[in-house]
Amino acid sequence: MKKLTSLTLSLIFILSIFLFLPQASQARIPADQCWDNWERCRARAFQSDLETARTTLALTSCDIGLGRCLILGK
Image (tube, rainbow, N blue to C red; front, side):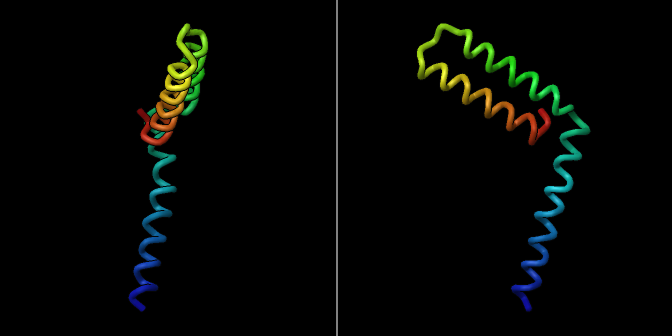
């Protein structure tokens, strides 16, 4: 019985997070702005005259920034 209760509470908690976070991020910043910033970041990384390793790091930081923007809305 305790396992069923804890499982139910965990499920409710996880579902509430997934239902709340998209609404919270959309209220603060539109997702289009995140994607626009990501495209600009990638274009700058490809246009730079850096070596392959640094270009890869720049592209990775663009992807991390996109994820942060979409999840946290910043």
